[in-house]
Amino acid sequence: MAHIALPEGLPGIRGPMAFRPDTAKPLNEIVDILLRGPHSLTPGERELIATVTSAENDCGYCQTIHGAIAAHHLGSEALVLQVKTDRAHAPISDKLQALLTIAAHTARSGRAVTTDDIAAARAAGATDLEIHDTVLIAAVFCMCNRYVDGLATWMPDDPDFYRSRARMIAEHGYTASTVAQPQTGDHAPTLTPGVGR
Amino acid sequence: MPHIPLPPGLPGIRGPMAFRPETAKPINELANILLFDPHSLSRGERELIATHVSCANDCQFCQTVHGAYAAHFLGDEALVLQAKVDPESANLSPKMKALLNIAGKVARSGKLVTADDVARARTEGATDLEIHDTVLIAALFCLCNRYVDGLATEMPESLEYFRERVPVMAQHGYRMTPPAGVTS
Image 1 (cartoon, chains in turn green, brown):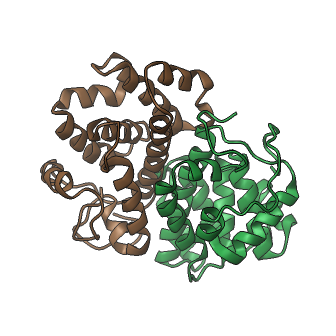
Image 2: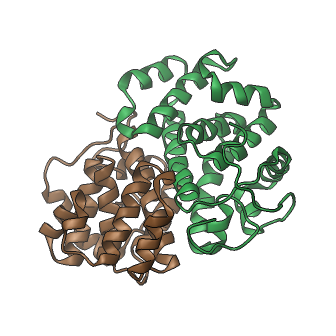
């Protein structure tokens, strides 16, 4: 059960977002710009940064939904699973490897990001904007993960729920998908944690 | 030296915010709603939550600037210093102590917030909105602290910088356009 009375039927971050639409609006804007705006990193790559950060923070809902969106964009659930569980051997570019390391370090603490981490990313071709946005995406998900878990929101355990939401968000974006609160795929609450890890 | 070249003369979060104004705008909007807009928690109390979390995350810039804002609104620098490290023994209301306890746990992990922590806050008079906003303020500063330190932004050389920021923020809040305006 969530720590405060939240609107029913909305899993994860959508419950507290519906509870406080004023703060949900800029929150969704931040995520839309960073994950879906025009960018030299693909939406799939940026969703992987969000997924790895959420996995580092052990946030079941965020890592599952953003993992599903990443898989939708990249066309492979197996790749996302490997990035989460065995990143070093995942078949991704050296640049993305270096950026995911920066994201994982940011999840622990901003101070854990070293000049060597940055040099490795730059050597693999990362631009200043890509480095900036990697740190900021990781930082934003350190916020979202804590928002979701700090209020003890619930998460569905059916993988199809996340696949269906992933398609909707990939097509319509975060602001549209959250503010409109489409009910597709929603179902009864479950207490099963950690689905999709 | 910052990890990426940032506009000069803007310490802390203001450097990366000037580097990327598109993302700065909604971050500042969120900060303004949570810390500056009308609320049942005073501005000083909300700045204290931001300061306590920034201290827990060991972020020098954020804990200094928001500590200065909190001291301004509360009129008590010593109280802010104590609330940063040991809120339970500080001269604060039982409700604020319970909310700072929640914020400190959020700083480490959202999963550490227990039903007992929330029940304690509620017993001391905290509303659902106050509990929600405490969690979200704490979460927002976990973002800001990492943004500031993850890019190795510059700390001002003099504490005078922070004193000068106080009246600017107290007058305008966080909703100004960077880099000219107040960001944090």
